[in-house]
Amino acid sequence: MMKQPNESLLQRVAELAERAGGAVMKVYEGGEFDVSYKGREEEQSPLTRADTEAHHIIVEGLHRISPGLPVLSEESQEVPYSRRKGWKSFWLVDPLDGTKEFIKKTGEFTVNIALIDGDRPVLGVVHAPAAGVTYSASEGMGAFKAEGAGRERIRVSDYRGHRLRVVASVSHRSPELEAFIKRLGDCECLSMGSSLKLCLVAEGRADLYPRLGPTMEWDTAAAQCVVECAGGSVIDLDGRPLGYNKPDLHNPFFMVTGDPAFPWRDYL
Image (cartoon, rainbow, N blue to C red; front, side, top):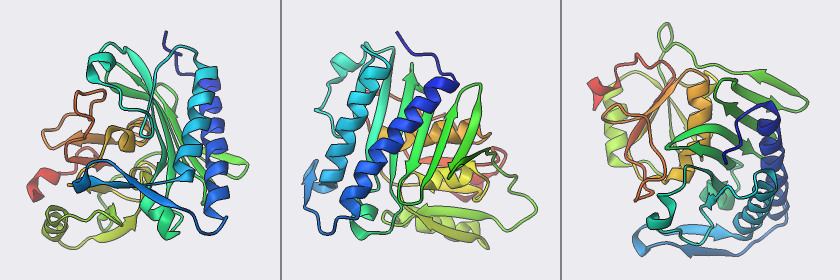
C-alpha cells in the first residue's frame, strides 16, 4: 500500500537523501576514484562508488519507511515492464544525478528520490550535497528549500517584467537546444548540472528550462514534483505532463516553465 504523502514522510525521505548525500561526499572529497561505464555503447553513462553506496543506503532506507513498496533505482537490476506494469505506486530513485559533474568536481550533482502514484510524482526530494541544499515537495503541501537550519517555501516567478532567464545543461547541449535558445533572442542563459536545473525554475531563479535531449525517468521525477508543487509545469512538446513507469523509461523532450503561460511553442 502506498504511503500517503505527509509532513512526516517528506521529512523522513529528505533525511534519507541527506544521509545518502553524506556517503557521496565522502567519496567526492576522498581524492581519486574509479569510474566505470554502464548502458548501451551509444549512451553509456559513468558509474562511481558514490553511485552504488548511495543506492544501497536509499533502497535499504525506503524499505524501512514503506515495507513492500517497490523501488526502481538507476542502479537497480533492470526490472522488465511485464513486472513493473502491475505497480500502482513505487519509489523512483537516482542515487547520484549528474555523475559527469561529480567526476568534474563542479559540485552540481544531486540525490533524487520520488514517490510515484500511478504515473505521477506525488512526493519528491532533491538533495545537493556539495551545496548543502535540499529541495522537497509533496502534493497538497507545496515546495520547500532547506539550507542550514532553515527551510522556506518556494514558488516559481512570472517571466514578464524582466529579461527571460533560461537554464540549460552543462554537459548535454544538443544542436536543437542551441537553435531554440538562439530563436528566443535576448535572454540570460544560466548553466547548471543535474536536476538542479528544474529546481532553479521551481525557486524562481530561472523562467524556462528546455530539455531537447535524452533523459531517463529517474532524472526528472523528484524535481518535477518540486516544480509542479511550486506552481510550474514540466510538459512534453505536446503539452502533456511527463508520465512515469512507461515501457521505455526514456523521457520525451520536454519544457520546464515557471509560468505555464510562456509561449515556448512559438520558438520551436
